Image 1: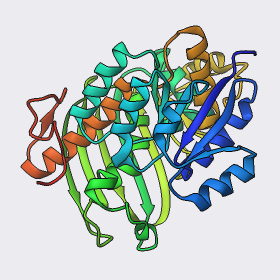
Image 2: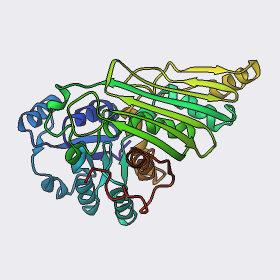
Image 3: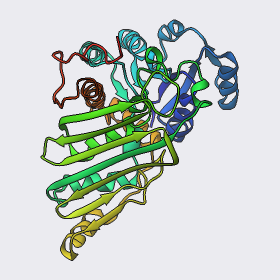
Image 4: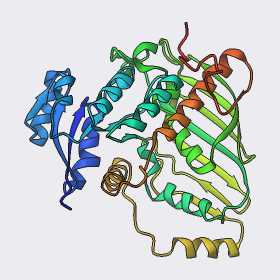
Length: 356
C-alpha cells in the first residue's frame, strides 16, 4: 500500500504503546516521523529506541510541519481540548487518547470544529478490538442473542500512592476525573457498544482508597434504551484486578474474559440457550478471521477510513456517549436523582462536572 500516513506522537507515555501496537505492525500504512514530549529524557529514549530523529518539545512546531498527516495526542487529559482544536485548525488528522475532553460543552465544540475541518478525528477506544468482543458484537447484531435482559460491568483495579505520585494524576484540573475517566471508561464504552445507548442512570461516586481530589470508587444502576437493566461498579481498591462484562440475553449468555487490560480478546464465554441457538452461532462464526487486539486493529481501520473516506472505527459521537455517562454519574451523585439521557446544555454539569 503506497498511501503511507506520516504521524507525529505527542506525549510518550501511552504514546509508546501506540507506536509498538498500532503503527509498527502497519509499516505499510504509517510512518512515525516525529515525536514531541516535554520530558527530554523520555523524548530521547523513545526516539533512540525506534530510530526517530525528529524530536521536539514545542507542539507549535509540529503543527507547522507540512509533511505530517496525523497528530496523535497522548498527553495528560487536561491538555486534550486545546491540542485537538489546534491540530484540527492546522488541517491535520487527529488521534486522541481517552478521555477525549473534560466536558460535554467541550466535546460539542470539538464536534462542531470537526465538521468544517480538513482532517478527521478518531478517539481511542482500543478495547473494542479482539476476537471476544467482536464475536459477541456479531452475534448481537445478527439478532441471534434475542431480547436483552440485564448486564453488569466491573472495573476492579488497584492504584495506590506510587501511581498518584505523578503530579498530574488525582487532580480535577489535569486528570479531569478519577476512576470513571481514566480507568473504567473503557469497559463502559464496551458496555454501550454491545448493549446500545443509555436511557437513565442513578449513580454514586466516592473517594475511599487514596488521598486524592477525584473519585476512586463508583457504582450505578442503568436503564438502557432497549429496556435492559445494567449495573456498573468501579474501584481502584481491588487486590485482584479484573475487567468483566456479563450480558444476559434471551438466547445467550455472554461474558468477557477478566483481563484488566485486554478484556476484548478471547476467551469469552458464549453460552447458548439450546442446540438450535448454538447451531446458528456456529454457522455465523464459521471461518472466523482472527482480529488483532487493541491499537493494532483500531489504527488499521483508521487508515482504511482515511484512504477510502468511509466511516471511522471510533467517532466523536462515541466519545460523547462515554462523556455523557460520566456527566450523568457526577450529576446523579451530587443531586441524588436519576439523570435521563440524552444529557445536554440543560444539565448543571454540561460545562464542567468538576466541583466549584
